[in-house]
View 1 (cartoon, rainbow, N blue to C red):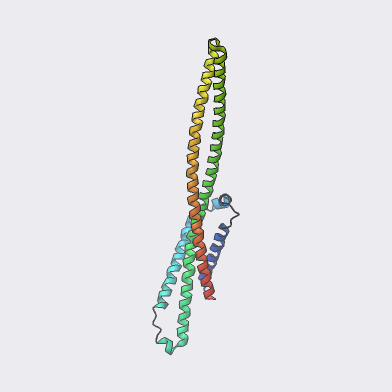
View 2: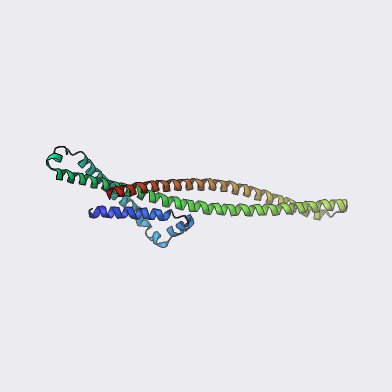
Length: 241
């Protein structure tokens, strides 16, 4: 194996290792997001997109070169040479095998490079969705507690008004009645605003849950595709051996 294909094979093994680390269940999406926010990644942010595109171009060139080699040795007429020069036929067959191996290595490297970029994006989106969902849930719980408190205060004021009318009748202080009515009106308005905020928080929470479920399904699908590709690569390595 030449130096360039050794480098591509090493790059492929690194990609497989990184994706396997991403699959570890005890590392949460929030932890990965905090790792992605390290200062070292911010320093490399200006070169990140350029490096990603450069690696794609290199892998595409190597893939096309391997494809050309496969077509070259596949279409060669070896019927006569196999009888006259059996060693040459074996040599040609070995070159075809190496070209196919290089094609698989470059193809899988290119595919996993794109998959790894997509997995990182999904992890960030999943972590953001989980954080937003937790914040929405906390806000909904706070609004629910405030609504219960306002309802209890409203019931107490209504009970106080009822008792005052029953005991004092017309001799009740009108100023006190006005204050109580204003307080009841204020609490009613606050209860209405809290109820509206609670409904909005619940709707936002449901939307974030649906988004989180969609991201989780997409993440699981990519992991399954990665596992299938890894199994194919392992079977190809066994054939090479």
